[in-house]
Structures are given as structure tokens and as C-alpha cells.
Amino acid sequence: MAAPSLRENMSLKSLLSSLRAMDTVSLLALLLLSLTNLLFSALVPRWALIVLLNVSLMVIVLVLISSARRSPSALLSFLRDWYPVPVTLIVFKELYLMVHPINPHDFDAVFIVIDRWIFGVDPTQWLEQWTTPILTEVMQFCYSMFYFLFLIAAIEYYQKHRVEEFRYGMFVILYGFYLSYVFYFIFPAVGPRFTLHNFETTNADLPGVFMTNALREFLNSAESIPHNAANPVNFAQRDVFPSGHTQLTLVLIFLAYQSRLKSRHFILAVGVLLVISTVYLRYHYVIDVIAGIVFMLITIWTGPRLYRWWNRKREGWGMMVGRL
Image (cartoon, rainbow, N blue to C red):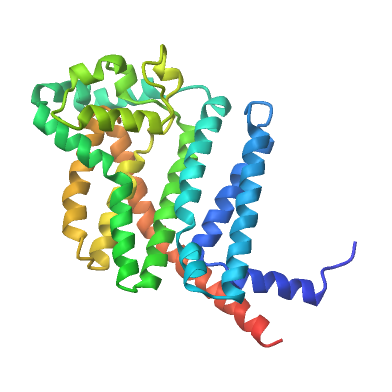
């Protein structure tokens, strides 16, 4: 087998030097998910469709990166910066088709025991004495703001032409998301709204004022839980441990204050209530929130180091290509 030629090596280094950190983490996530589907193809019913979708996305991303590099334009630059948003959402929905078939053993019973060991009670049941329709309305609104908080911060970066900070923040957030996704495979669970409470009577047991029921139904449908399903737990996404809402919201708060965004105080206020709402609204056990805090610390400690390491590699490859 012939060794790669110098031209081939330089082409590879040229490609790698054009990949930003957020490109690399996005492409790696798609590649690893595809390999996971191939490995567990006997268990995942739609593995071929997922692999085809991921390969198509990788090709589209690489074409976009190449096109933006050769013929820079405002539109291509915008697409180059923002494509990870839909890719991350697609990956999240792919997990729905993968996690339970690959690991059908839910860990809810373990998390319930841990919460009881720490607190002596089930926290979501204990909180029932403090629930009111107005408080529930506020909590449901804040919980529903999860993805919008990221958009608020990203738009501020972009409008202020703080593009490098935007790209750094995008990488750290993406890295945090994908880090949490790994553990959904290891510790799948559905959360206390299914195990400690009656999911079908949530609207009656935990009523809001105006928007709560509509927001709750919207989030349920986003998680692929059909309205009035006979066995809703069978449709629930296994995405409880760690609490990604906690982890990524705290990462965002950290980045917002680090960058001194004008929206940082709003993000903090809504973000704190969002974290509390994960337990108040019965989406998570407290141990999920604790794990989310730990994962947040891991993300903000390792993320910047990985970002700097990749940028040093990019610069080195770029210099090598430029000298030829």
C-alpha cells in the first residue's frame, strides 16, 4: 500500500487548518453517532437513515466551509457561523431514536434512591406544598426559555461584531451539549414526572395561569410525546442525567458575565429560575441537577483548553501549507 503523497498530506492539513473548533466538535459528533449506529445496527431500527443523514450533514458542512473559504460573502459567512444550531437540534432528535434501543434499562430507581438518601424525601413531592399557579407559570416560562437564552446571547455577540467571542462561545456550548449526550446512553432515565407523579394529570396537579399548559404541551411534543398517548413513558426521551438544562444554562451564565454582555443580568435571573424549575416542574431529580453543575464545571475547565489547543494546531497546519 503506497504511503500518502506530500500533496495528499498538504491537502489534509489545508482542510484541518480551515476547521474552527466548533466545526471540529460538530463533525466529530456526527461521525461518532454514525459509528455508534453502525456498531449497534442490530438494535437501532432506523440506523441506516441516521447514518445517511449524518454523512449528508458532514458533506454539507465541509462544502459550506470550503465555499466560504474560497468565495467569502456575507451569506456564506453567516451560514458558516450558525449552521451548528440546527445540527445540534438534529443530533438531539437522533438520540431519541438511539438511546432507548441501545440501553433499554432506565436508571430512575437509582436516582430516586440517591435523592431520598440525600434529602430523606422525594424533592419533587416535597415541593408540592409550595406550588401555586402563579409560581408554576413563572417556572414554566423560564424553563421554556432554555434555547432562547442562547439565541439572545449569540445575537448580541453577532450584532456587536464580536465574532471571535461568538465562535468561542459557540464551541463551548456545543462541547457541553455533546458531553452531556454521552451520559444519556450510559444512564438513561425519564424523570420524576413519569415515575413519582402521574404524567397524564400534570396539568391538573400542577396548574399555571395562562401559558403553562400550552408551553408544557409544546415541550412534550418537542420531545416526541404524542398528545393523550396511552403510555407516554414509552415515548419519552431518555435525557435526564445529567440535567442539560442546568449544565448549559450555567455555562451560558458564566460566558455572559465573562464577556460582560448587556443581557447577562437577564440571562442570570431567568437562568437561576430555570435551574430551580427543572425540579419544581418534575422534569429532573435533584441528583440530575447536581450532575449538571459538575458537568458545567468540567465544561468550563476543559472547553477553553481544548479551544486553545485546536487553534494552535490550526495555525501550525496553516503555516505549513502556506510555506509550500
